[in-house]
Amino acid sequence: MKYACLIYNDETNAETNPQFGTPGFEPMMAGYMAFGEKHGARITGGEALHDTHTATSVRLRDGEIHRTDGPFAETKEHLGGFYIIEAENLDEAISVAADIPHAASGTVEVRPCMVFED
Amino acid sequence: MDERNRKRIEEVIQQEWPRVVATLAGDLGHLGDAEDAAQDAVERALRDWPTTGLPDRPGAWLTTVARRRSIDRLRRAKKGREKLVQLGRLEERLHKTADPDMVDPDATLLRDDQLRLIFACCHPALSDDAQMALTLRSVGGLTTREISAGFLIPEATLAQRLVRAKKKIAAAAIPFVIPPDAELLQRTNLVRTVLYLIFNEGYSASTGGDLVRVDLCAEAIRLAGLLVELTPDDPESWGLLALMELTHVRRNARQDGSGELVLLADQDRSLWDRDLHQSGVTHLDQAMRLDRPGPFQLQAAISALHNEATDDAPADWEQIELLYRRLLETLPTPVVRLNHAVALHEAGRSDEALANLADQELATALATYRPYHIACGQILFDRNPDAAREAFQVAQSLATNEPERAYLERRLAQLPAPSK
Image (cartoon, rainbow over all chains, first blue to last red; front, side, top):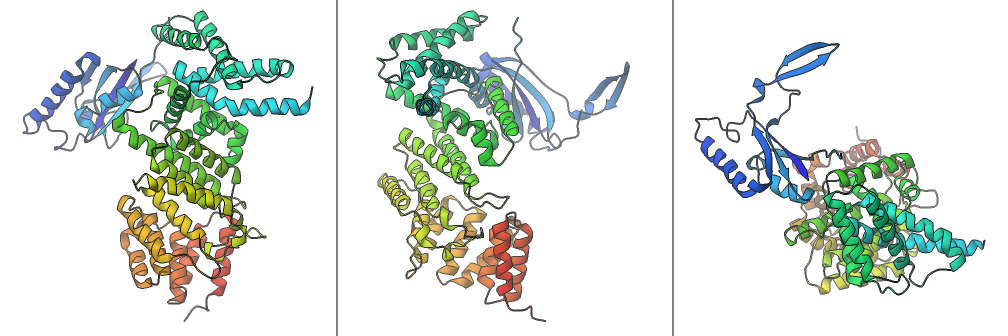
């Protein structure tokens, strides 16, 4: 089964969300490398995202494209990236998600991906 | 058709239902499918048993029929890898138990299936409400009408809740497994918490005039008994059962003739269920023999001490205070701190009690907790009537059931007039 692991954390917190070039950045990246090595076989996709201020929200209403600066919603914890993983069941997906570095300072939302029978 | 016969058949079916569902859920790893298969078997039974009579092993009969229906269904359905695995497992299990009437149920397998089902129903990914409803339905075998009556919610709401919970189990693939050793303690604690929540729901209705909804309490006790059967080496499971029984002892004395709330100290002890007290004490002894104390055991011991109070000899408050002090070590919650303070007061240490209750952090945490204000009012009653009045009035504004409101009204009337 496929699960999406949506990684939320406070991007304004320099300690838990170190920027490139700051001392905390390398260790954080090392954490994600380690995660990739440990669970590599299960990871079928995923990306790290730029901070939410780089986001644009798009809506199509009455044939017109509306563009708004910023993320879909203002939240205290922000979507920073995601993985798509393979797991037998929810418990397995949860134990993988708990290894994602930002699970320690933020929240990882684990949600099953839809399966479309043909 | 013989009415009594029909009723007997229905009783047997309701009794066997949870075990059949547990076994099928173990087979299929899918609660919805398990219930569908069990339902099919029940319909067959209702059709056949009136004429053939009750089989020797009704549970095995139902399980075998349910498994055969599941195999039929799987064969006709689209094949995915998962379906093939289920089919294989079902056929294997069915082969092992050829003749429904000759089957000797594998007790260990059934025990494990029941545990798996309980752990799935009490999975932390489900909301508290969903866990309670699902446990009562699938493990307890209560009907949706019985459950909704117990919780005082419309049957449609309860039905929706069950549907959503089962959908989540299926969509997110909540597994039917006994949790790995590393998580077993935490998960078993969670099961006990769910059962205790059910008991509390029955014990103190928070709305309406009916203070004690007995049915849910009896059901919670029955489920706690089942948990003890399934985890006999876990002292906290014995402790939970004991705590529920020892509390339930006092159910008939909590309200007087006019439906008003009666505090523990004022209860008519002749209405206490002495047999149940004995049962609770026996179960607590079993727990203590395992020599691994825990919060449910401690709370059970406290409840037992309350039950041992007589008209001549009040409860052993010094012992109760000591037990609360120990309970605070593992469960330093605001409510336990409150109960400890009350015990201090009753044991003659009112200054300490008041000092504890006045703690800012505690007062804030319990600001909307009625018993906190009631306790403050009780302890201040003679020392500082004005402060006591204030406390009772806050409690009144927070009261959500009639017996409690009426009780507070009486207490307020007993205070001397406010000093100017």
